Amino acid sequence: MGVAEVSATATRATEATCATGPTTVEERWQQILHWGPYGLLGLATALAAASADAVMDGPETVAAGVLTAAALALQLWWTAHQRGLPAGAPAAERPDGPAGPTPARGAAGPTPVRDGVPVEEPTAPVALVPGAPGPAATRYFLLRTALAFALTWLNPFFAVYASAGYFDAVHLLPPRPAPTRAALLVVALTLAGSQSGGLPPDSALQWVVLGGMFALNAFLGVGLAHLATKETEKAAERAATIAELGRANARLEQALAENAALQAQLLLQAREAGVADERRRLAAEIHDTLAQGLTGIVAQLQAADTGTDPERARVHLRRAADLARHSLGEARRSVQNLGPAALEHDTLPEALRKTVSAWSERTGIAARFSVTGTAEPLHDEVAATLLRIAQEALANTERHSGAARAGVTLSYMGDEITLDVRDDGRGFDPLAVPARTAGGGFGLGGMRARAERLAGGVAVESAPGDGTAISARVPLVRHD
Image (cartoon, rainbow, N blue to C red; front, side, top):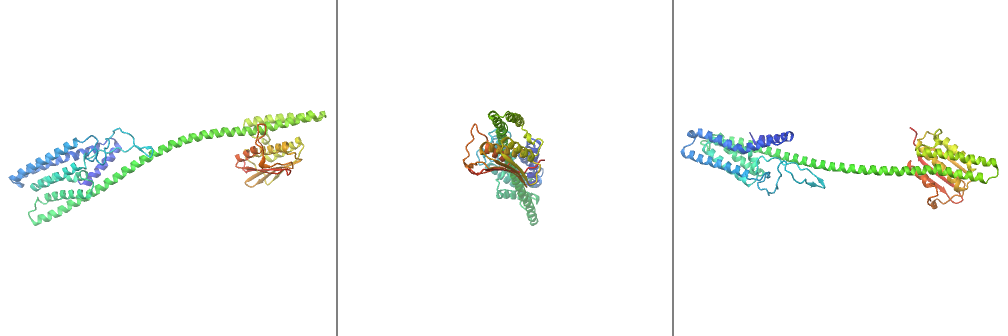
């Protein structure tokens, strides 16, 4: 089996471990790489002993025995060295080496933090050869290779022991191509000498066979080791990618947690904004219903009290009662968030015509209503907003302008609808409007607030002595 096959098998073992649980397959490979040289040395010794009479003379047999004992002692030293390493030591020989200590699988420790994000680091895999690479591992491999070469020189069957270099050269030697290739070439030469009939060659033909077998073994050993190295690099890249994905997942989880907190905060702000908006709506509705109604009731009662004609006084009292009932109904509808009563059975143009007519009759101010463009069914909120703006504008005309005439125009203009309220009163300076007081109304600010809720606006044109024109524009949202 070549180095690449060993590495590929180890990679498959790692994948199987990730899928099935603990590192059972890796630990088996660790045992093979640990005890394999013992088994190969034992098999080579048995074969050499069986062929000793045919291959070796007396001194060579003694030398082979000494070298075999040295090889066994080397294996025992390497095993004792590995057992003396601290538990969970890194691949480097020293615990304080460049790589730093690597926690054993399942070992507890502080969770690392990167960019403020806790990151679970991937658990270090079980080292296939503990203590390697490192100075001791390099010395062990070189001494074993030299002993195997010397033993193969004495008896070709000791090449079985030399073949161990194909399995663990990549693991024992430093991760640099040159030392690994040189070691594999020595192993290839040892195996080629055995395969060509023993070392040294006795004839030209044997030298030719040795060259061919060396080329074949060198190609297989170095080529497969190169492939194994590339596979190891890819495995390291995959591990780095998995670690980066883990960090990205941790950052994503943190972002999701922050988004959840932000969403909760936004919901709270939206709830508070909704409460404030509802308060403003109720305040505007109360102003447009109760306040205006009570103002009209007061005016009618004053007219009834100051007049001398009993019949005329009864008319004012009847109007005051009608206004009270109407205001009460509007207040109830406002609390229930319903539209104005005037729009319950009528379209906006019809409701405005009736409103202007009733206002003119009640105040004695001549008023005219007109519609331009093609009337279209409107969304309930658009119709209610424009009706309330018209009521507020007429109420302001009654209270402040001293006008003799007023006009209301509703214009359908494609994607926009406009409401214009004009009067010939005393006018005012729009830039010098006094601030709203506790006893005052919402006035222009309330109109603008209503229009802006529908992405519209209110414009005022007025000057002292030139009357007033109020224009409200809102998008034309049709009724579903």
